[in-house]
Length: 412
Ligand code: XMP
Image (cartoon, rainbow, N blue to C red; front, top):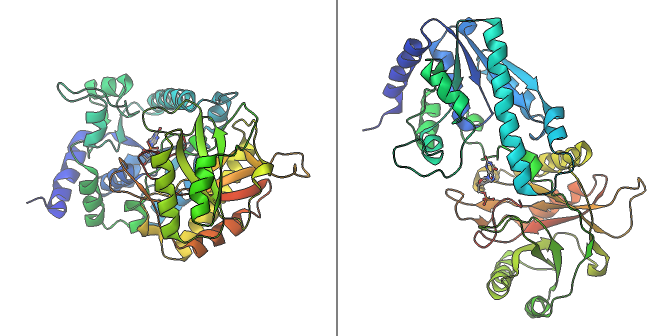
């Protein structure tokens, strides 16, 4: 049988053999895999033979880098070096609206920065190995197993890494394991739950949760949706929004149904299913957590990716997750994206900024392939909404009540 505790000793021995007295520079991301792999290395090697490297893209959540540093320090793991490249990532997003283009720029920039890091290491110390938390599915999805097709190339499976492997300068202690095995190993290592059972977080981070737009549009009445809503004592309209994720096509014009009025979760679930089953042009349903929405006053406006918008989203995300934690509901959801969309409600803000909407997207899932909107208590969601509405420029807070399919988990 598979026994993480006995495996641990074997892995530690392998790390010592591969490192062979050389210094290990380990790329940590804050995710489960690299946390566990780094902790394994720390048990295998003396502190002066290991250093963690963490690239801050500026698209991470509030205090993420600092929390990681503190968590590792608490465990007595060697210090991590934080490389702040947030300005470069933000510059790469200048004028970009299309979600795919965002991804196509962020991935290669990340690889470029890794390449520079390797160059800098070489300069500093010639006796080195690069470590990373690659797991088996990363290799499969990148087409790295015989006869496999490429699903998506992971940044830990690019040519530079293959070259390092050929030079015997690569250390990947978890490359044969699956995620659940990695979690079990993490437990055998005595890592705290908050490092092992983290919610998944996309590589491009908040960049794909800050929706951009080059359009101006009003909410549109929709007889069918209004009819369904009326049966339940609700109101509904449609917001035309570009770049809202729908399976198999992330780019075309998409419609979001906005519904409003007093309702119970069970009703919301029925309304959501009725709308997405009945109208293929609508792939997402959002329930307004505000007492009343004036559909006439809803506007989609233009917006780019700026540090100001990222900061607002970072705050909203931190507020939602703090309240989730305070109610002990963290482990009831599989993931909880918080999304900023350029939709205003009412007048311009005194600052001259256009108002925006925050979407709460807590979901239940097993593997992310399908998902159901999380039936969190409405009073808890309303508490989040009330706190988030205090942020400057936030007009509305909505609760995404769509399932995957037809929607996706992320909005881009
Ligand atoms: P969707 O939105 O496709 O998301 O339902 C499924 C899962 O994948 C994550 N996701 C990403 N992860 N880079 C990543 O590393 C990405 O570009 C990306 N896009 C989506 C998403 O957070 C969810 O867990």
